[in-house]
Length: 135
Image (cartoon, rainbow, N blue to C red; front, side, top):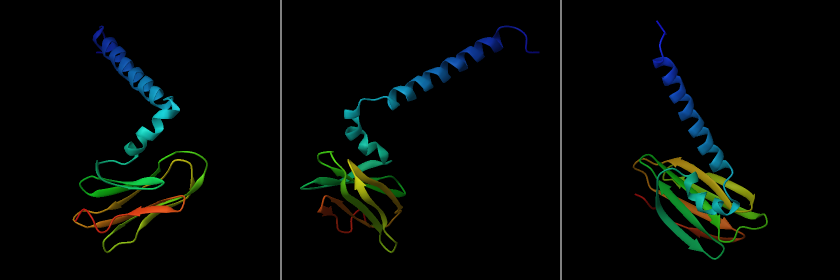
């Protein structure tokens, strides 16, 4: 029933695919430290929708069909400093990430299908915000 080389070839092919996936994950894990700032946007799913720049950083918004995601990213990564990001759908409670970070605050995500949102990002005492957007 399981005789022949057909099952062995399929198992070898499956093992090869599994090995390729593991190597790809390992390569992403061991990426150079300088690539993290470029990958900051990849923490949010969806497409980039709006960016608000301010003196010490920027507030980035991403939107998928049902969700909106926000990050507050420092212009210059460095020592830990106070950062926060807040994202609120109209009629809902804000999602907030606040603390002392080196590079970014967030991501925070809210369900915003057919709803406006507003966002605020703060890095080292300077902030940027949107009004009600994505309506």
